[in-house]
Image (cartoon, rainbow, N blue to C red; front, side, top):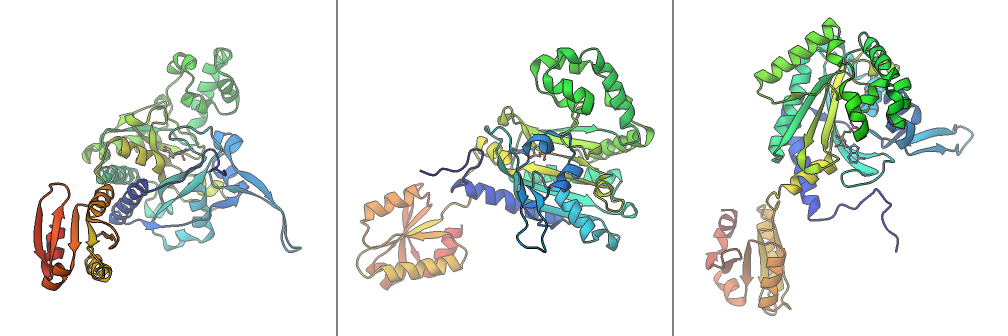
Length: 425
Ligand code: AMP
């Protein structure tokens, strides 16, 4: 038997109903905040991620699906390509390539799609997973750098989580400073790590040299006491970064968006500046981050584009769905009615009734006349239908149907023309 590759999975019904529900809510809520959809390719040149995400990150150094794409004609060059491990770099590349900043307006873009990372698979962590993300990016003159953008993004995220009915999330917030103040913090970290790094895990020993900020998100239990005592980034922010962060927090307070400042949250991608954030959920165990994001004021320039500050996030859709499933949400878009043709010649009448109900927006399914009544009722219940509608010769002649409520067991007769209203009640 050929099976799905480790770390990939099939999404099957009825779970897909929940995925579609989430995506529907995303489109509704994001539209209310004036976001529009962008779709970028699933693979890009490797260099985009090396430059955008950062060579020193786990993603680029060990998790990318990369291959040599051989030239097929004299006019082509052999190139190194990568399945996208995240979508911000692709969106910013598209922003630069299509000169989206030329309008002078903020670009508010969102995407929904698969991402690929060669991580060790476990519950909530896959090699193909889905992200729902958004980016607000534009020239400085459009206000792309201002704290109001950060607050609006976080407000939209809480609106979305409320709209899908997720309960019990926590928003962690931090500022990781900017290229002006981060070097002095990195230096302070390096110095603090000098004396203790030999007692820490191998990864931390390496990171202490290459990218000391990354030490802060080490999960090794034995390292935690050391990390607790490291210098705090808040003490190293320069005045503009400090002020920016204070304004973001003040606006969140005004919007009554609850958050906790977590100074250790530096996130796994190198492009972040100033505001970073993560929403976690208790039901998810070790992979508790439902979504993460932050500001990336220098990313466009890093990719060879114009100055275009921005802020964005990516929701792990797999994890959002897992968290919602753990909450036992009500069945989604359940089947309203099962239409049951009774006896020979009734199939077409049943199909016609189903067609009318479907045209009126009612979800119905149809049995067939070879089913005995008992089997039809059993099937209707297995399908989760609320009603069973019987279509026999008498019903067709009288244009009135026996309608059984399968939840309560009650049965009534409903006139054909009143059926839609009755089912929609
Ligand atoms: P990142 O792009 O690393 O900031 O991740 C953003 C969000 O994507 C995380 O908070 C997770 O919810 C989700 N995510 C990241 N990696 C994976 C993965 N391998 N499997 C499932 N979800 C993931």
